[in-house]
Image 1: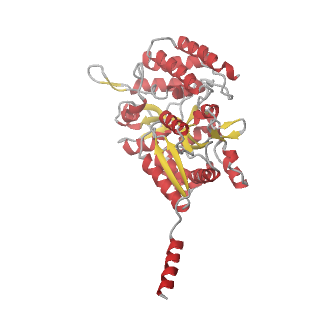
Image 2 (image 1 turned 135 degrees about the vertical axis):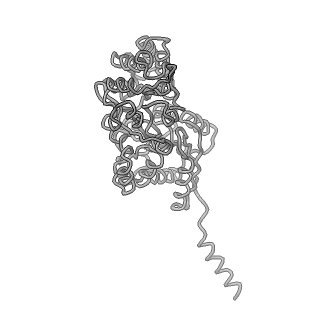
Image 3 (image 1 turned 90 degrees about the vertical axis):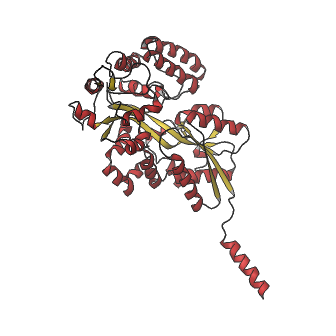
Length: 424
């Protein structure tokens, strides 16, 4: 009798014990901006596992976007497991060229799953769609916004609630905002735009505002030498070299947020992905606005998408789909936006009680979303890395005075034409 009871008890305990994970999902994740993002992602992974006991999520934190791409591709070549990754939205063409990803349409087959593919902001899908197929699911996405120090504006006699609406106004305001000590040394700049790290991204905003995009939708042509584009780089150069409202030469991406929160610049252009970090560290009231216009307003979108790798089993693809759907629910997109400052990637997120309340208390949180109506896709072409580096080098050559904007951009265009000609 005791033996029978023991067997029954053993059976009941076995039934009550969760089954061991049958499917493991490894995904590479780029840590590229401020904030305790590893804790947030780890928390999401553990929460998903509790709801899906048959799946184990293994995040691998791989540095910046370029580092994450290099590590993920190296793992694939080495035969190490990697099912999904958050990589640059602009990595699309390279990943397709290397034949390492599959479209989400291949695994999103039910009516509900197909509806999910259409749930995201159209502006965010431009960098994830190729020939009608969805290869990138928006997750860590942003636009560039203008941050301003309201105390500095007030001190300079400017309206602290009004950001510059256009290029002329920004230069004029920035002139008043420059603050020097008794010896004439600059203590506070009027505006800073970072020109290291992602110079092409910032320059895309200038070019878009001046009426022109840097590439065609097919990813096989660039417009670096267009007169509107050259004029945009000239304006950026003049802010430092002529107007003296910004340091001449280059401005570091990685330290700019700290310079702003320490009061060393009254305005800065930066990713909305830094919004929560600025909110938590600034000791002064600050505003966030859409970027100023020239012929029009404009900003590229930016950030990372979820990609599904080709070397995956049907079970892994199903688990990966479930995880990415879970990560992009309206509630989680709202939570992610609040935790980081990144844009919530689907409209329903802004209707959740949590994000509605947050936006009511902190209206800066919706500026990047409102800028979508003026947004363009981030610079992405075939041979993306090489074509992008041509532009980065041209920008830095112009900002440091080594070449004129026209010389630098025309040379970059000539070389880009050579690289992209086979794809036309």
